[in-house]
Image 1 (spheres, rainbow, N blue to C red):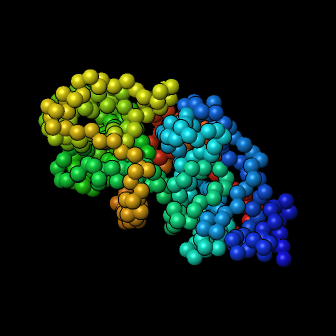
Image 2: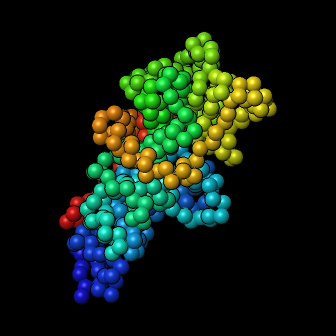
Image 3: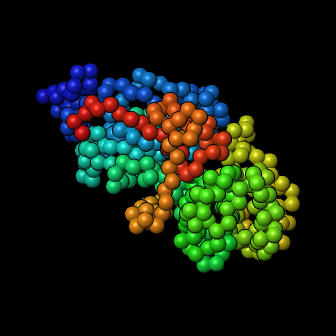
Length: 377
């Protein structure tokens, strides 16, 4: 028996495959889709990535979901991935994009024990910069609805939550410095530190960002374009800060090291200022670093989310609970103020990455993938 979808759509199910693959319930899944593919290794996203328009829509296996992406997240490290810095053994062409949220449009039989067609799910897995992505049901995250706010938590929110919980040892009264505080992950570091009853200092690059930081509880926003961060820290925090959540690198890293209090801890979650360079690094003053740390009994800790997936589910559950209670702002930047307007469609991923590196976004950069109404879902 063969069921057919609308004209031009894929043949949905034949019974020889039915034990592996559940019915699309009449949804018109096209034969082909658009997706972004890394076709050469480069930190220049435009050079590395190609929009391909006639790729086969993938089929989910027994334990998989086929997700029709509605929103995808932009991360500073997208260009590290396109440059091949995370896994040098992977050669082009390969898919790109770390996170997405959308609806399940098809699923394998085993996956149907926990999910249904039409259900909203979010996920962290390579290949989200596509109209459709196959996601193992084991790593999918049920979402209350397809809202971009849920997307902000997947990488940016959990990075802040897990790193501060595991490495930051936050407690009431501690002074916490967050660099790039109005960005995708900085916004969460600020709020989570405030929830822990810390005093929070946040660096940013505009008055609009300062206003946003105040709105989410930041005690002392510093617009580094109008105030020297080093001077503010020395004058207002002469004893130093206890924890630094650092994602900028370069001169900001050097400044943050100097601002550490006795027994302070600097958590490195990135160094965006260097990602576009051939090496991916920004020069830092490492020569005196051992002496500086020793003098203060201070520490540097690196944090890479992939090493903490055992903590991931609990982190997501906690963030979702905070958001549901109204205790967490998940600021989304869909490009309303970008030069070319809102980020809509896969082709606008390029503009969104460029916009991130201008440093003008407030909150998490998200691209919307609209879909024609060609489905019964």
